[in-house]
Image 1 (cartoon, rainbow, N blue to C red):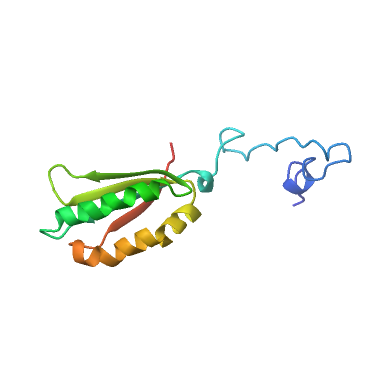
Image 2: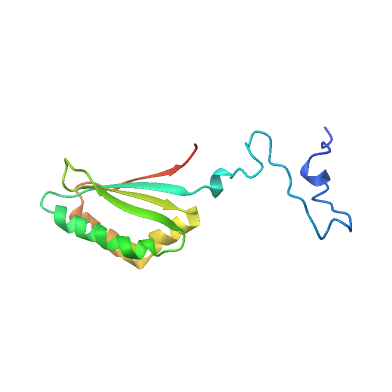
Length: 139
């Protein structure tokens, strides 16, 4: 089946005439994408939910280690928010709610010295492995 006139290879924006080279109009968004400026899933912030449960007697130590991560992480490129929560009815159960502008910024965060240092201490503080899930907003 031959390409339709609106296919990327045949659109005026991809094969501009000499008069069009200086000024390109934005191409229409793909069908079903909502608005012409709709963001793809990869362009939306990446949300991280990280849950930590301390060993008995290590609640305060874990709290202090997690709190120490906040100021430096909030200064990192791509960090939109980095918020720590503690369950009011379960001392020692912590949750980070984070938003990053991209997967690459999150990957950079995970490789930074302050985070790798915390991970080196985690076995002594955690009752179970951290539960970390990634999310993208859909609405």
